[in-house]
Length: 324
Image (tube, rainbow, N blue to C red; front, top):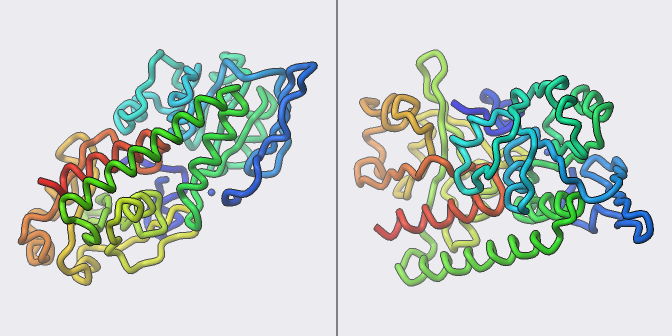
């Protein structure tokens, strides 16, 4: 099972996977017209000064890497390049960045060797690691998620990275495209008579031969997208304060009733707990949506904790599946 974020499973009292403020005023104090210097205030409140728009940028988490790619910035360093290519096909890397190690423990030596203008991290990265990174290059931290306003936080993160890289116009284009994409998918839902359809999206992992299921509640990023599509989130749990994720087991699915159950799993079928590990489970087979064939595996490569490109791909894939 991949680790969608540095702390997600821990935050939901499960295992780990996949944190400042909501969307308020702009986090940047702007550029100095004379010197070209840019001063930003990141998600932690730290002021960051750049000599100019950053060109050589390192991303320590996949959501910030997606933002960089969406903005037309080719990162020189990416954490777990292979994992990114597997889990995020909505914003494909257009270059061959250096692998800087894992998202939880990036290699300081590797990053230093790249002599970056900027390192973009998230507040999930341990403060001790950020402190080391600041000795190498300016660091801008973004908050990965905010269950009180996931879509607003997603915009805020993109805007902050855009200001640091001089890509504000591109950011506006990305946001407008995403808004139009959601509107189009919303119309498709209405046209298909699916308005108000109850959807339960989840993923899962296996530990000690036990399947743990992670519900994406209405406070999750995917939950926020579902609501924009006019769909109803079937999960009753509230989820954690950052990612809106909860934790349950197969018995916890019995309260769902008649729903459309969707999930994304590893590209290898052997890493699909719903199709493999629960296949012969009596409780799983007794669930109404399993009996009705309303279990949908969405395409691998849609990063559930990504940015505008990933959420646009998710909306397209879900609607396409529900229309069939």
